[in-house]
Image 1: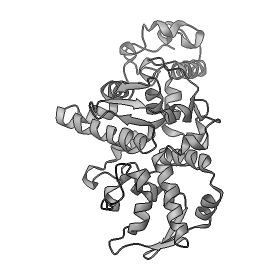
Image 2: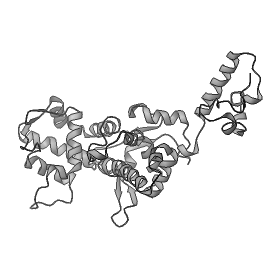
Image 3: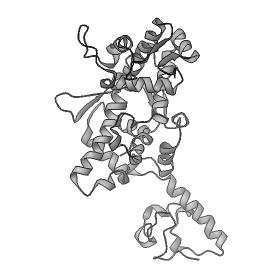
Image 4: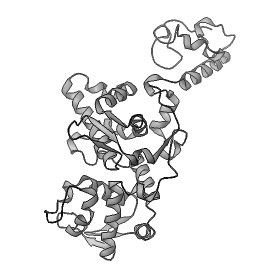
Length: 324
């Protein structure tokens, strides 16, 4: 039995065989890679076995647009929890307390819990549902380093890092709410008393990638399921950013689009739509995630330029070499 030129390609691309894998020299390196059109099969079972080997080896082959990762590996990055990606990345076991306290979200969390401890573990929200002024002020050195004592205390809604910290505290069950009262849970009390901030930092990073609603701070009319891919692809994006201490967002976007062309495809009809989709990617990945965790800094003079911080370099151990 032969695969015809006009038959669906056995690699699963959906294209005709003649427009896909026919004539690809990479398919002749082993019996499993042999061009099916050049083989004869004595039975359907034999063809199925060959197709199984053929598909497996195709899926395990490195892809340049994926930085040298295979399609199987990319699927794992996009679908597996962060803690199941140890073949790809792990936390640095030598990460220390001084290192992680450079993280704005972690510093805000520590100050947030301390403010609650000062008020017997509970506080009441304002009529508008915001945190009390004293709690907000306690967190400002970490979530608004530009603020100086004597200046008006910003409203909670103007402090995105504080808003993300509060959401993560609820998610991690460090705080709970009953009516207008927010209070520390036993888990929150334990964390504040024991102060295992390195483990907490790693948990925050993991939860933010796996479970946090990345679109939480976007205007409601901008939110779209299409943008969920930005969170799913975060491990790959961090890997790309790790290749250069300094770089340009434009170059990153080019790499991202080569890896995930379907992400930008719906917006290709106009430069305005493409720019909007790219701005959401930059906001959610660079500003809301990386800057909130202290992983990168954006240049004030040239917003297209970024620098990865020492904290970022110390946080992760990458197991795969980028070949893009």
